[in-house]
Every structure is written in structure tokens, then in C-alpha cells.
Amino acid sequence: MIPVPAPARQPARWQTLWREAIRDPRELLESLGLPALAARLSAPAQAQFPLRVPRSYVARMRHGDPADPLLRQVLPLDEEDRRVPGFSLDAVGDGAAKGGTGVIHKYDGRALLIATGSCAIHCRYCFRRHFPYAEETAASSGWASAIDYLRNHPSVREVILSGGDPLSLGTAKLAELTGALRTLPQITRLRIHTRLPIVLPERIDAEFLDWIGALPWPAVLVLHANHANEIDATVREACAALRARGAHLLNQAVLLRGVNDSVEALEALSEALFDAGVLPYYLHQLDRVQGAAHFEVPEAESLALLAALRARLPGFLVPKLVREVAGEPAKTPL
Ligand SMILES: *Cc1c(COP(=O)(O)O)cnc(C)c1O
Ligand code: SF4
Image 1 (cartoon, rainbow, N blue to C red):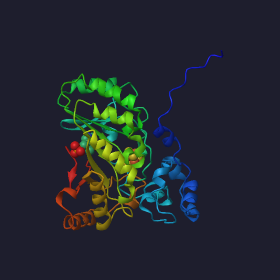
Image 2: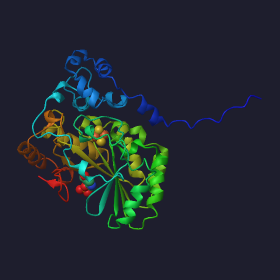
Image 3: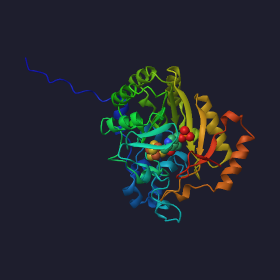
Image 4: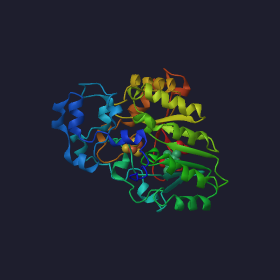
């Protein structure tokens, strides 16, 4: 008999979909029937932070609409090349907060682990466009230095997995971390900041659900959707499955010019989140990151939008408008 080599572990379906993401801006524009928009693409922006967008997310974009709110979040246009005073490379002071462990501990009682630098989607407004975090992730050392840090800081009771997108890691890698966290008696809560259930809901597969359902602490997932059109039936299914395993679901959004800067868009987002079993948590004033100035909504306008939203929705569907100010002990309410 011919010996058959042991089969390599099959990539999970979500990992295949991840790899099949669109990375060529021209391919994206062709598929949306928008070839003329190619004239406005920016090569420097694409080189600095390349397009990346899962195909199922592209399917939620409106064909032939150059102003589509989902397309606008991912397309590297020449508006990004404009240098605007006040928009910098390290808009939130994270450069100073890193200690080589992948842990960012700025707030009392909770610490954020930069689990990985990878994301399934590249959002043009994100400050991480200038922080690939390639060498400073908590996972790269097998989590050991992050666990050491937490052991030495028993006041940290809530661990927040962030990134990049922590669910870019395979479930086995996440289980490695939570296995180690179980040895720290101080931990009372696990939080995960992730956009994956929105942009690639297939990530929430049976293996992941088994993992999250078996955690010894309450789990809070803070999702990231900015527009109601991002939330389709596959997203609602993923959210329902997470809730069935006991996870609490919240959402943080960024207030973005041309994406969700109207009371109608914000209202529709809150309603779509609620339909999916998710409550709005934060609405972030844009971090002033270089290349993202065209997304900014001035603070006075943000406040007016929130006041209008408050007049339309129950209080629990109105997110808290906040800004991140370097050196402050919490997000700053506006
Ligand atoms: C935003 C953030 C948190 C979480 O803040 P909450 O108000 O608890 O949601 C924690 N750590 C860091 C470094 C943060 O930037
Ligand atoms: S960290 Fe979040 S907002 Fe930033 S690029 Fe990744 S998925 Fe988008």
C-alpha cells in the first residue's frame, strides 16, 4: 500500500473566506460597476494601508453607488493624501503606552491586550493604519508576557482582547490565552473588541461558540458596525448564536462623514443593532489620524446629531458620544 501522509489540519471555512478577501481596488470597483472611480484612487494610501475587504461585506454594498456608506469605509481614495494640521500618526497616544508585552493598561481595573495586528477588513479611518503592531502582539510570545503583566497587576479584573481584530486568531490560540487566564483568580470578565462578526460573520463557527460558551467568566463582545446596511441576516444569525451561548453584545461605532452623519442613519443603525440583539455602547468622535480628515464630523455637529437622536429613540438605543483623549482616565464624554 502507498503510505498516505497525515492530512494537514483543514483551514476553517472562515479562514478560507478570509484569504479570499478582495485586495485589489480596481477589482472592487469593477465588481460594483464603478470603474470610473478608479481615477480617484490613491496609490500612496493603498501602499501605506492596502485595501482589504471580505467578499460577503462587498455583497452588502449598493451596486453602482459611488457614495455607498460601506464602500466609503474601505476604499483608498486621494482624499487621504491631504495633510491636515492636527491629524497625526499617533492620534491616541498608544505609541507611549506600549510596554513590549502587548498590554495597554491605561484605565483602572481593565487592561487591553493587543492580541494581534491583523484585521479581516481595513477601515480607512482607523488609527491602526499607522500601527501594524507587528512585533508587539500579546499572542506572539504565546501570551506569556501578557499573563505575567496581569499576574503582577491584580487590580486588573477585566481583560479586553483588542487588536487589530482578536478574532483574526484561530480559536485554539484564543483557548490558549483563556486557559492561562484561568490561573489568575482576579479575573472576573472577558471582553472582546471585534469587527469580525459584522464583516465576516462566518468567523462565529461551532468551534468558536463552544469556546465562548465554556468560559468561566461572563463574556462581553463589543462589535463594531457603523451603518445599518452592514447588518444582514448572516450577521443576525451570528449574533443570535453568540447570545444563545450567554455572551453580552454591545456595539461601538465611529461617527463618520458620508457614512453615518445623519440622524436617520444613526437611528437606522441603532434599530438594526437592536434587531440583531446588540445594544449601542459608544459612538466615537473620530481619532484625528493622518489620512482620515475627510471623515471628521465637527464636535458641534456631533452633539446636535446626538440631541436629535435622543428625541427619536429610547435611551437604551442612544450610544454615548465619546472622544479618546491621551492621558485621560477614561473615554471622555462629549
Ligand atoms: C477604550 C479603552 C478601554 C475600554 O474602555 P471602556 O470605557 O471600559 O469601554 C480600555 N483600555 C484602553 C486602553 C482603551 O483605549
Ligand atoms: S482595528 Fe477595527 S476599525 Fe481598525 S482596521 Fe481593524 S477592523 Fe477596522
